[in-house]
Image: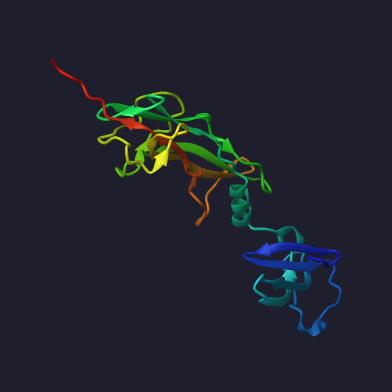
Amino acid sequence: MGREGATTFCEGDYACYMNFPSVVYPDPESWPEEPPTEESVYTYKGCHHPNGDEYGEWGWFTPGDIGPSLTDLAWEAFGRLSVPGFTLAHNPPTQAVIFVDTWWWAEGPSEGEVRGSSAGGVVAIAEPSRLEVDPGDGSGVLDCPFTVRESDVCSHIYDRASVNGAARTGDGHAAHPARARLVYTVRFENNGAPLTLPGLPETLESEWRETPVRVLEVQAVVR
């Protein structure tokens, strides 16, 4: 804040400051008769918004009560969560076949929870919820269990080949632009105790990861 000896904190989007003790004081006749606690100090609070708005007021303040709110700390803790990287894997591994199940899973992350670092004692915890997979053929997004190893619990059947697919494999073949993301359920703790406040985020999603999938039509000749 650039104010020597000032206590700085946030109130919503406003950056605020106070001096303990205050540099100047108003007319004592305008002070309240009694402080709310023995530790309370009568001083001035000034707050500024990034858009240029500002406000200030005199009042009784208790030093131990000044600082970011639990909601502010929870949002800061949420920002410290980091979703693990992953690769969208599938089986058959090199190319899929129409009318045959294609299995999907996220390769790389673990099945355990993800914990962010502490923000003033508040920690955000992300628990695995589901894997969302878009096969890239226009069929829509699949809601699958949180799958991190090869399994048939997340599967899709392509009904058309990728001859006119919008993506390309590494060797230049037309492919369906499949993609996926990880979805977590978020909870908070304050010094180890559950913390529930209105307006906090309840989910955390990774970025979409894309994987081009070549899909073939296999023709059999019956004699």
